[in-house]
Image (cartoon, one colour):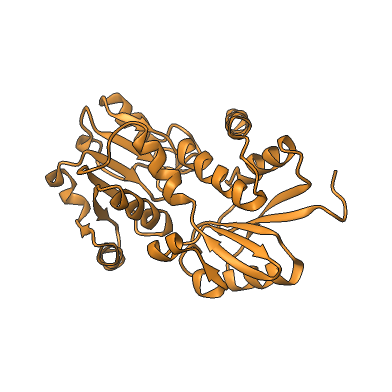
Length: 271
């Protein structure tokens, strides 16, 4: 029940209408008997949202596209991991001081390490936004060799240079002979369910293909990869993992991961 003691948590992004973050986090709050509520806010200007956190006493927030990088200078403290990768997806309000963290990194690394050893693997990361930055940073920390592919050459090269990775044009993906491909763009997200971020002919048996898009769970990329004998990791894995880490930062309690997975699957079935 909501009352004057209920703590407010928020999602800041643009767009946010597709997000199942509120479904996941509110179910977790209920399961853990925490008096909190999580709401999504479409925020074109992240500076306004950050000001609202302090003014209204919002306890914590998730940050999504397109604000994961631009939010950094607006915060009071940045966790070293988030600082190193240059992207924040989680904010904690501690007595008016805003602390920035990144849970995307381990949210992506953990599922990948669950299916293969990352050391020495050639990984093509599609995208150059905050999610791509987190994925590339995380896998590089584990000894993988990241290659950045992005439509904007300038932005892709900038990210690659900052992370000590290589930038390659999309047309040259096959020449890298990647072991792993990670889609860290929004291509394939509902309602554009048929969109795919690369030529399916690139996909070969034995590759690991991961998509961070979770609406739908089985994106066009995941379907194409599965048909070609790849090991696939859908967006649900990263979304739940990073969400569980967020929940633990928000509350200081262990995340009820099974509950979070269950409510997400039910919500997706309804869609």
